[in-house]
Structure formats: structure tokens, C-alpha cells
Length: 456
Image (cartoon, rainbow, N blue to C red):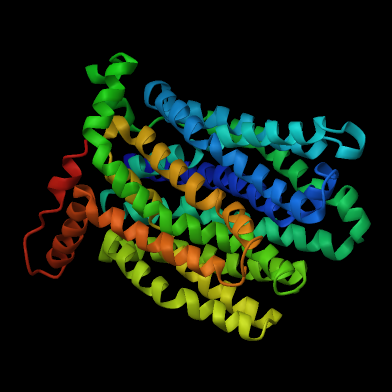
């Protein structure tokens, strides 16, 4: 018995380690692209003025998200059929290829129109690959985690976000401090993409040696797992359609806040508030350390109070704080105030985001988990996260840009909680959270197990 327990513990640690590596790699490249967007704009979109080139760069940033739902569905269904580990291994290879293409493509002055086309291709490859990264990592961790620690172990998937923000902002800050502006514009911004490309083969090697979970093998033994594609899709919609609505609500608020805070705010501070890029990167670096520390803490908290109850607390707090935060920053834009705003925003990102992996996997059936999490996660990230900088940049060209970000975040938070509450799944898991909380307090029998069993 002791040997079996030790073996399971080692397996969980290995899954978590590979998940953090893959997630860090995913977030790293997307964040670096956002930080150096103005330099990428000048390198690849040199034929237009500065404002239009930046808009085209954010559009290219968004292109990677347009194919994420496609990649998520394709790789998710492949994972449900062939295995989570095999799919995750090939995802690392594709991500590495996309990063290498971005790092090595010559600028517009050398290749002309071919340069931005190659950049778009690189973003498409990355987007297709990472479309299933989060979903498959979340499912893999959830399936090996102990029953009472699903959210805690799942939070390590979100820990990769904090590590990626720390590495990308820290590395970008060091480059911007030690290289001249000309060196940064010419080749310095390419360095992080080269580093990201080197991580891919290492991640492939580590992931290739992981074993599938027992839960996956049990699912594969069922006749439904070998059903034709069309039948499996119909079954998925019938069994998981309502859960998709709930999962979209869970993701919308967190992803909009994350991408506005980490991708748009550094440029907002630079162009709207006239603060230096290095100050924004410094703030991201400090807040990412806080995120790394608090992700497991909030994951454990979600296991204790219920993840969907925590989600409602997050929404209520964020709706109260979002406009005052921007008023505080705009009243006297300084590096200190930017740091305070970044810290508070990242606290909310971590509070809700830590439980995202477990919250999404929990509500889907075992045979539809990879596909369901991939669709909900990637659709929400595409529409409300990755496209957020582009939306805000477009609207900012026609009106006062100062209060567009908080207005956007306020609206997405309202939409998020509405989708959770309107779905049968959302109402059920909220009820289960309350019952489980009462059960722990000794006030009522535990009825939440039936919900979990119903998703197998």
C-alpha cells in the first residue's frame, strides 16, 4: 500500500511538472509578443503609419486566437481517442516551430509583404497548437488528483501563468535596460522567441515519458469511446451542451481581465499615460511573483469553500473595484500607482483563475472532457481575451480611450456571471458547493457526490 501511494505521488508530481513547463511556454510567447508589439509593428508592418502598424500587430496577435477553438477541438478529440499525453507531446513541437518562425523571419524591409505573411503563419501554428494545451493539461491533472484536492492540484496549471509572466516580463525588462533602443528594435525583441523555441524539444521529451491516467484507460475500455466521429459529436452536444454555457461564463471574466492586465495595460500605460515600458514590465514582474505564490493558496481555498461560490465572490468584488482602480491611476499617473493597480488586478486574476482548470473539467463527462474544456476555454479566450487589445485599440481611435478598458472589463464580468447562473449546470454546482460546505460544518449530509458521479 505504501509503495502504491508513493508511486501515485510521484506520478502526480511528474504530471504537475510537465504541465507547468507546457503552460509556461504557452503564456511566455503570447506575453512577449504583446510587450514588444510596437517593435514588431515597425519590423513587419513598415509600410503604414505608427498607429495603423500597432493596430495591425494587435490584429496579428488576435489571429493566433482565431484558430485556437479549431486546434482545441481537433487536438481534444484526438486526445480523447489516442491519449492526453500523446497529444500534449505533439503540441509542444508545433508551439516550438511557431516560435522559431517568429524569431527568424526577416523584417518588412528585407522580405516585403512576405514578412507579415510569415508572422501570421507563425501565429496560426502557435494558436492551433496551444488551443488544446490548457484543456489537456487541466484534464490530465484533474484525473490524477485526489478527490478532495482537485482545485488545489489544478491551480498548478495556472501557476504557469505567473511563472510565464515573471520570465517574460523579467527577461524583456533586462533586454530593454541593457540594450539600446536601436538594438532592441533590430534584434533584441527576437531573443525571447528563440528561447521559447528551445523549450519545445525539452517539453516533448519529458511529456513523451508520462503515462496515461487510470481514469482515461477506463474510459477507453467503454464501447462509446470507439464510436464513429459523428455519433460522438452528437453525444457530446446532448450530454455537455449546457455545461459549455456554464464553462464559457467561468472563463469570460478571468480571461478578459488577464489579457487586458497583462497584454494591453503595458501599452496603455506607455501610450495613454506616457509611462515607460520598463515601468510596466517591472510591475508585471512583481505581480507575477505574487500570482505564483497565491495560485496554490487560492486553489486550496476553492477546495474548502467551493470553486463556484468563490467565483461569485470574485465577480462581486471585481465589479466594485474596476472603475475606482482606473480612476486612481488616471488621477495622477505614476509608476507607483501603476504598480498598485497592477497588484490589485493580478490579485483578482489569481483569486478566480487558480480554480479555472478544476472548475471546467468538473462539469463535463469523462469522455467529453478534453473537447468540452478546449471549446469553452478557447472560444472564451478568443472572443474576450485575445481579441480584447484589438477591440480596445479600435474603439480608442474614435473616442476617449481612458475608460474603455474598465468599461470592457465591467461588461464582460456581468456577462460571465449571467451565463453561469442561466445554465442548469451552473446552478447545480453552486448548490453542490453550498451543500458540501454545510456538510463540512456538520449541518447537512453531503449530497455533492451525486453531481460528480453524474459526469462520469
